[in-house]
Length: 611
Image (tube, rainbow, N blue to C red; front, side, top):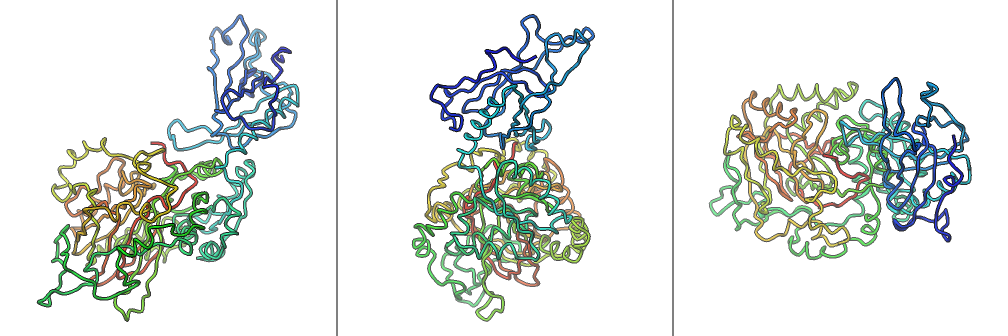
């Protein structure tokens, strides 16, 4: 049952060594092996990966059982980039299914003992391409030295991939989501161990611990790791993100319109627009009246930062990545960067060294007055910032943590029934990319006509052309991170009135409750956020908007009371009774704030969703 003598040899160049990586497709390793659950195969390895096809006897193209002929599957393969581990196994059984003449003796399969090695990779789910399923191919050979040579050769090639992590800092939130943070890590830890990735695991014991650890680490300490992993939800990821960026990334404060501090005209009247006015240009003659964080002119501030902002941070940021093992309540960030909230899939993205850039918004809380007790503060967010409905839900849900993720459903229902609105003024920078707000011109009854445009939407995916367009990850100047802020023709526009919610989405924010997210065509790294303003409206109308969010293919933005603006920066000022902001699941109090987007500021261990 073993292959012929000539087929048992592995053919490589005379000067080749088994512990050297393959550098080109001409370096080929080939031999005959027995593949578990298949049978005898011809196996070839080159720089692209492993390729095999079953070896059949000369007088048959398959097996015949009860008059039915079964043909063997054509050549199979696994790409090198999809292999996360290769290891020798003990002398053991290989299950055979394509032995010649086996069916003549009514034997449907048999087992033989051989030396074995295992190739660990994954298969994509047929129904959900973004879901990766671990799969192991076990090859057997009668000669242990042949197996050992193949393992050494494969591992040498895997080790030569500098993008794969070797050392990771892992933070586990034990109470995240349903309180399964530790169990989630235990489920994926064998993948890291098998891939020979060293991990230092910190199970947090208090809120803010991960932020404090990341903030206090020196560059020398961080350089010992290839990245940091968050085993938790969006809020926990945000905590690690801020711990990494805040103490190291030096950047100017967000630009603001000249009347951000409510100046008055010559008659003593406020220059703010009247109730229900929207998208009007701000008068150019307005001037700042009260300095807050900085009184420097933004053009000068931009010029001073249009250089290497911090060489050490830039060097570190080129290779340091953040990964997420989803264990939260919504896991919107991981849904948008991998396409699924499956912990195993995320672990595979990490050990395989996948890389995707992610926009980050800098959110600055300003002092409302020079004597305000609330001090200026800077936070960074990667997915969403929301006020009004979103802030009230996160506030209410804190009282029901014992309910687990269901607390958001309960709190959402309670907040919806109260139907609160808040008076505010929002300014946003229009740089010519703001698509026409069709909702402001049509009623929702025209939604069938609007749906015909769905196919034209550019949805973010793996190797996204929008995210990769004109991007230069090697550039260190602040202008490369904010390409839209200082573009010619940019003008500030304003909306003022009563709002049920104010939302700023950097990504689509897909989740189990909203399969398309808030903005289906939002991108991971295009340098924009999507400003969504929900004006005060009847209860029933708002309910229809929320229902559209829950539908796949829905159109939640196509209502007359909804404004949608694509912008790189915005400001917000509360004009009366206040809510709080929800920043990636964390509460953030701010009477007055401004925000700007840094394009592709950080890298994640992910490749983007398969769409």
